[in-house]
Image (cartoon, rainbow, N blue to C red; front, side, top):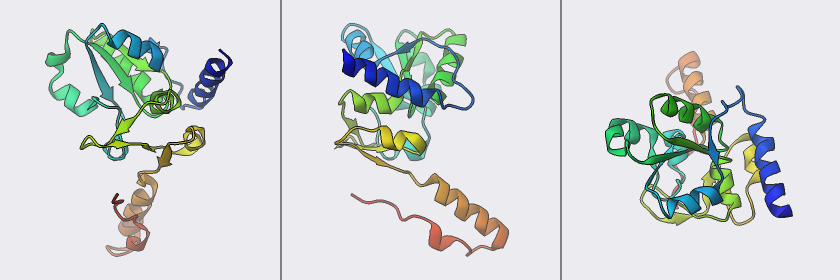
Length: 180
C-alpha cells in the first residue's frame, strides 16, 4: 500500500510540472488498464514524437498518425493514450473524447509503465528497457530501465546553427544515430 502511494505521488509530482497543465480527462493507472484489457478490446496510442517512439514503445501500441489514418477501424474500441508522463496524452485524450471516442489517458505515461515493471519494445518488436526521457522524468525511472534522450535538443541546435551561420556550421554537434 505504501509503495502504491509513493508511486502515485511520484507521478503526480511530475504531472504537476506540465506546462500548460494537462486537461482533466479520465485516466487509468497501468494496473487498471491491464485489468480492463483482459476483458475489453483496446487500441493503445502513443502520442509522443517519432523520435521518442524510435527508442521504444509500449508493446502493441500504434502512433497517433497511424490511428488517425485508420480511425474508423478503432471506433468500437476503448482507447488508451500515453506520452512520457501524461501531459501531451491528456490533451490528445480530450480531443478524442470530443470526437466521441471512449478514450482514457494513461496516468503517468511511460514512466508509470516502467514503475509498474512492464517491458517496452523497439519499433521492430525487440524487448528493451530503454525509454526516451528528458527533463525531470529522467531521474524518476526505476532501476533496470535506461532513460535515454532522443537528441532533439542537439538536432534543433544544429539546425539553427546551420540556418544562422551556414550549411556546415554545427554539424559536429549532431549526435550519431545510436546502434545497438
